[in-house]
Amino acid sequence: MTIAEQIDDTIVTIHLEGRLTAETLEPFQLAVAQRLKAGGCGFVIDLQNVDYIDSEGLGSLIQAYTSCRKRGAPIVFVHVFGRNLQLLKTTKLLTVFDIYSNALDAQRAAAAMTSAAFSAIM
Image (cartoon, rainbow, N blue to C red):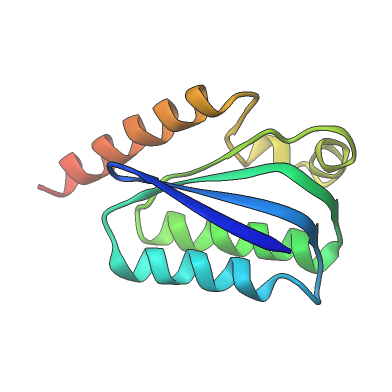
């Protein structure tokens, strides 16, 4: 699993590549935790280059979603296709996660949610 981060204003896009499994999920969890600790940002999780997600990998996506929601940080997912899309359908997470087919829409949605979240605090 490799991870690349792209930061645009208050949005952190985390690009995952490889398999998201019990053996590889720690770097993803650490990346989300570190950015949440810094605060003030929303997340776009790009799954375009993730070719396999096991049950613990799915759990790490749920954990990231839950952690972000608890802290008021928006999180959306982009490029969820094929086997990964089927997994989210089967587990009914398509009704929970905000999923976008392209990066521009995902970033705009996360930015809008981030603005709304932080303006409500002030």
